[in-house]
Length: 361
Ligand code: CUA
Image (cartoon, rainbow, N blue to C red):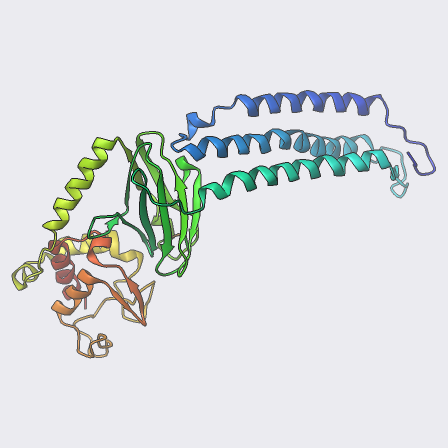
C-alpha cells in the first residue's frame, strides 16, 4: 500500500475493528434470516412469500455493506483524528492504490446487484402480465378516482365502490386504470403495488392465499384527498362466502335504482346534509364562494348568488339539477365528479345534501 511520507500501517486496532464489524454483520444477517415478516404483515397472496424472500435476500447482503462502510468511516475518523499537540495543517495519512481491495469492493457489489436484478426480472413480470381467462380464474377491473376506488366484477351491472372481494385460492387478474390522475394501488398484505394510469390498462395477476380483510392504500399523491384513499379493504373470502356476497350484491343492484322523486328531494334534512357534507364533500369542495376551489368549485351561494356560473345546461341551477349531478356525477371542463354510487350516497343522502346547500348563503 502506498502511503504518504509517514508510513501508516493498518495496525492491530484496524483488525480488531474489522472483527467486531464481522460479528455485528453476522448477527444482523442472522436477524434478517429469522425475522418473521409475516407476523407483522400477513403474506396473503402467493407472490407475497416470494417478494419477502427477495427482500430478505437483499437485506441479508445489505447488512455487511451497511456495517462495514459506516463502521470503517467511523473507525477511521476516530483513529486518524487530529490529536492534541499536532499542528492543524499536518497532512493526514494518505492511503491509495490498493488494487486488490478496489477490485473486490467493486466486483462483489456488482455481482450482488446483477443477481438481484436477475431474480427480480424473473419474479416480478410473472405478476404483472395478463393471464388468459379460464373457468377457474377471475378478472376484475379496478379504476382509480379522485378519491375512491371502483371495482367492476364480471356479471355485475354496477361497479362496487371501495370494496374488493376475492375468493381464496382462485387466480385473479386485476386490470387497473384511472379516470383522472395517476393513483397507485397498493395492498401491503399482497406485496403488490401498481400505478393506475389514465389511458393505460395494467394487469396484475396473483392468487390470494389467506382469508382476511386487508387494507388498500393509494401510494401516489393524487390531490387533496390522497390521504383519504386508505381504510378501504380487500376481503379475501372462502368460495362460499364470496358466492354469497356476489349473489347479495346482484340482488341489491337489481333493486338499486331508487328514483329520486320530487317528494324525496323535498324531504331533505339540512342538518343531516351538513354532517354528510363535512364528512364527505369537503375533500373536494369548500362551503365557500364559487372561486374558492379545492378539487371542485366552492358551493356556497349555489342557489342564491346571481353571479354564480350557470350549470353546463346553461340554466341557473335548481335543486333538481344539483340532485342530478349528485346522483349521476359530472364530467366536464371543471373536472370529474364521481356518481352517487361511487360516493356511497343514497337518495335520502342526496336530498339532505341539497337541503343543506340551499341553506348556504
Ligand atoms: Cu389516489 Cu393518492
